[in-house]
Image 1 (spheres, rainbow, N blue to C red):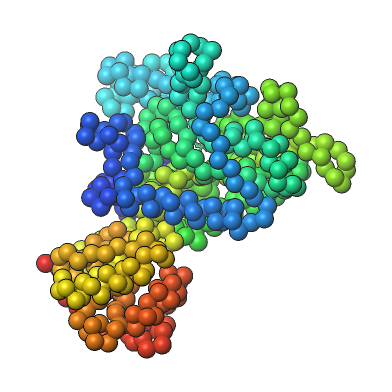
Image 2 (image 1 turned 180 degrees about the vertical axis):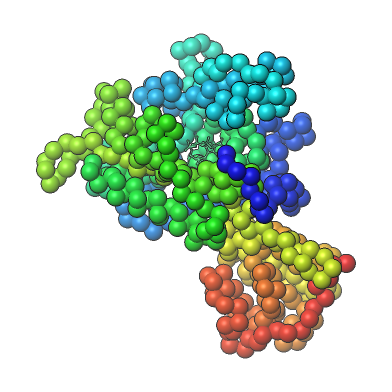
Length: 460
Ligand code: ATP
């Protein structure tokens, strides 16, 4: 982890907002929590779903050279022998001789304990894979591992995909799923946990074309974050040094994000060469080669692997969207999520709890719900309800007021500008759809108008 981030959002504010509003809770909280495991609440689960869906759409749905896969978490133990994880997936562990806290040796500045300054022991290698037992007898023969990455499920299915999809090189496989690592040091909220989710691509190419495809995927993945609203100044590409390269990698870049604790990895893009297919072919005894129709030769494709974390992406989207703005005598906190990422797209708010208003607002709510995640809220003052929606990142609020009962119109308030327009209720769905796609608020539907009337936005 590099230098301290200055001017960046405070991690404590993000953690507190996440807990207060139902994004993320510590796992098993009523028992005091479980170190480095997290539960995603009603908003967090929507945030994660939106991230995963946006990723899937961009790397599978919109491409004809990619297919999806969902493989099991437990795999044949030989998988991890072949992949090198059993031998190499280790971190150097040191222990403080004074306070007995454990640390990753490569994360210490010198050989002293960051907690008490005591001397640390010589490092020994610690394997990060979680072990468990398959079947009722806890004996060595039945040891299996919780996968530390989703990648291997895609390599061992290479031949199945070739046989069933008729894909020709270059083509890729994409998978989203849980991974587990018994990390020595965790922390920084959901940045490093022991159970997390990955979004991984294995893209198979002809040897010799791997360098171009590497550059292609690095750019593609960088642009994915930018197109979903992450600020370019908070992203950087960092090449791994020779010493840092994983045992399988020919070349690797990290896409780093400026997290509250400094620049840290958001996604890794690696050129894995033909390491994985060659290893699995030799350990399984099954051919994992590809018949090149041009040359009539059997070749082993090279692999480009963009590997992203769902949880780290969620944290980056949260940090990047977090804004505090002066608002009269108060501070307005908002999450300026891109609409695709926002957990709730629209909130429907009747101006008061009067029966006829509530009835109309609930009709609007029922009408919009099939299209998006929509919230209905009729508690507290309208100002407070706007602030709550700002804080959870809802791009648009629809307000039904007394005039709506007469003119069948409602106002749409935009989160970032707080500008409002008034449109016929019959036009709401189409108008909101266009605004969520990025249309300017002041492009009006038939019968719509810019709304200047100042509503009481103050809290209280
Ligand atoms: P780091 O150097 O931070 O430990 P890594 O290089 O080991 O990460 P990879 O093996 O490249 O990570 O994993 C791919 C992606 O999976 C990472 O970019 C990250 O987004 C995610 N990831 C890896 N480990 C964790 C973890 N412990 N908690 C949350 N996400 C993780």
